[in-house]
Image (tube, rainbow, N blue to C red; front, side, top):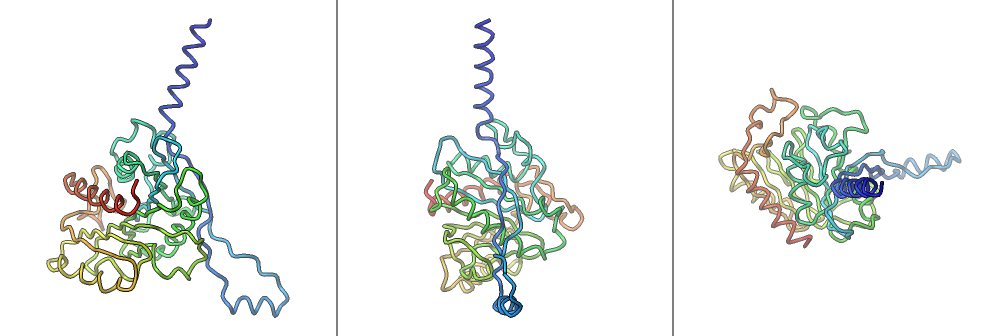
Length: 296
């Protein structure tokens, strides 16, 4: 009887070890939009109590590296297709389970191996949104979700709130990196991002405003003059904010990670090529940039 009990105990322990780093589902509120002065005055005139504004409830999947931490953290923002179903399974993130079948697995595997905890924000699932690849109007909600994730991470014992970065991908035809120097559009906590990386595919170039954190934009557009024009545009647009750099990598397709299908294969057929060499080149650039600013 004792050997059988010992075997079951050992098997259970091994199961716990193998799943120790699997993704945890967490929920938090996105950053809320502040109440306008007009709304406040109208409420006062009517003698009404104005409840504190609240953001939407969103969810995320957290994968942590071995050890208790506190770990540097990368908040991961999915593209217009949302998070793939595999992220939402109990096996995602478990040791040995991260076959590179999606963009999320590709990056989670590399980031956790370098000591980062990864928070994969699901902006679409709680809202019943399938994808926004042909509709970029969802952009503002993604910014609110990002600051909500930052506020959540800052309160976790396994996270180092002084070393939180962003890694995100273009959503639809418009990209706004959620680390602007002006955060007055939302009610945000005092914590700030220390670095941001954005993958874009835009002939208009990636940077549209001053940034609150050092930012790296990797633009996969193949426009003939983009290599010289986009770095110059980004330098101009980000002047007065945190350092920002845009690098153009022609033929770095949106789907550059292996086996990451886009939901709209008609509109985005030019993004469906798998380029493993480009993927590893991009991963190396992200590794160096995050190490410089988050120091895992």
